Length: 206
Image 1: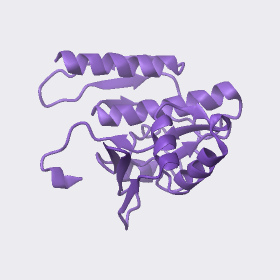
Image 2 (image 1 turned 90 degrees about the vertical axis):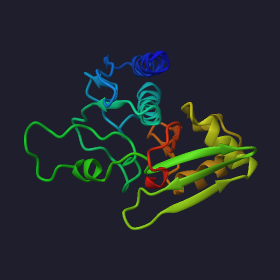
Image 3 (image 1 turned 180 degrees about the vertical axis):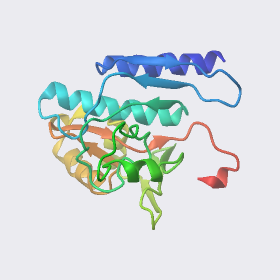
């Protein structure tokens, strides 16, 4: 219980550091997950200023870490996110709108989302990634090139792209092309795959 409480406190602090009104709800029973409610409406893919850009990347990092710790997130997105394909479908989707919209821009995200859609594991000098976000294909990546490996791990903590070296920027472009990184309009990078901390039963489910 102490470990779960510590994780919930850490995740809540991450959300609040991103400027969000985060309210933790510890699990009430053995078969329930802890969850965090975000009272602040969140937009994704629109932040062009340095502050907005950093906040968007920090929010995606928060969602990613919630998946790793199996903490549910209640949040809302008032405007359609400007996203390409299933890049974020492995992360907790926003709540359905209270009033019907035609079409609902996040309906596919909610239908496709499940645990373990896109995750990574670390080895000595490499990162292994399994990506099942595309509905008709599964991809496997092994990042053993030093620049790819470094950029992927450094961007677990969101950072501006201009902080990278020229070689690392080329590596970042390769990772962005495969939707393994996300870049806000303002230029902040964040790693998208989650770290598998708790395997489902059976483990072959992912």
